[in-house]
Length: 164
Ligand SMILES: CC(=O)SCCNC(=O)CCNC(=O)[C@H](O)C(C)(C)COP(=O)(O)OP(=O)(O)OC[C@H]1O[C@@H](n2cnc3c(N)ncnc32)[C@H](O)[C@@H]1OP(=O)(O)O
Image (cartoon, rainbow, N blue to C red):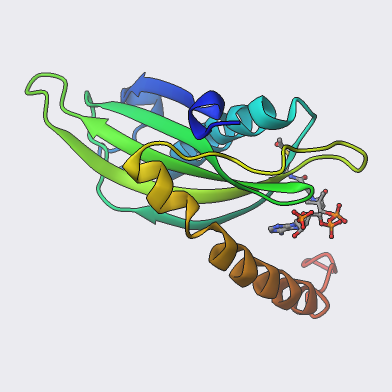
């Protein structure tokens, strides 16, 4: 399957319900849209009931201003056995001037249920897709190491009710 066959895109106008104190897009809203868009890309390759396993390297590069549009563009950039990596980019656009800017990039990992299968490879075509996909194996190694760290870390987190 080609990266482009998994591509999912959402575009929104940045207006009041989604603004923060700075009159720019609330980061939590952007994260929700990212998860939704990336999730669609993940289902397109797997046709399975995926879950979000991790979000790494979410860089907020520029604020998204009120009345600009925000376009979230996501595609599968690597496949493992049950996991897949999705790359997403966030593009802001001043709709009156037409100026576009990169507001963020992000990698997310989604996992299919046990028993579901994924294609063995994903095929990049454009220069950007080739650039992104070539880093998949290295990023997966880092993620696997971090996952173990995260499991060890969780052993030290207490679940007590704070007001007791
Ligand atoms: C769509 C939604 O809104 S979902 C809501 C939010 N997400 C959730 O609730 C998920 C909660 N977490 C879970 O259910 C589990 O931890 C899971 C399903 C993510 C992983 O659990 P398991 O099935 O036991 O994982 P297992 O160790 O078998 O690994 C399966 C694959 O996932 C990958 N993986 C598991 N956890 C992570 C992680 N945190 N980050 C990156 N990759 C991961 C593994 O590397 C492995 O990849 P591979 O098969 O390509 O080699």
